[in-house]
Image (tube, rainbow, N blue to C red; front, side):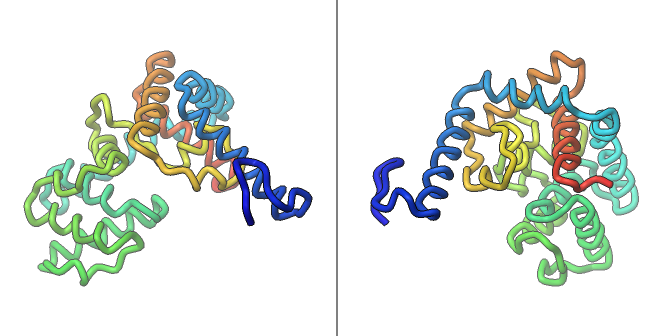
Length: 231
């Protein structure tokens, strides 16, 4: 199938029309991500549309997660930041419930004397489990790596934040471009796009008198409501 931008050899076929529409939507998403004001407007709209329950759940989400990290810190004898980093390392590609389950699993294994990452059965990628073990071995959270999402998530879980510590993933990117499907998942969260969305979240937080992590969590709770993940 030969094409140039939106012109294709078989313009009337369903597959061609679908491809054209997909390309147009992806281009529109990318244009939005290149416009900080548009990103802010879309996220601000989602925030202002959040239900009272989403606002409540999001505002307290990180405080509850931080309390969990404090309890695990006391139980297993690691700093709260080390615990938060282990949790964050194990977060990619799994739900929060599974994330917590896997973190408890790894911490229990380590406490029982396991020093082999292959002993752990987790839902995330194998390399992330290796990082979690390395953090526990050294007590150094920096072994989490330099991924913007995982490092920010660890800081948010530990109650620490700086100019970069806003947790942005593909779901947040979807909200930032106004996606109502999974099409936005074809767009990567580059460092530039991460910063654009992060700045929009911080702008909303400043206007609302909230922590950036609270705004991000409220947006996430609103997303969960939209797609039917909340009862």
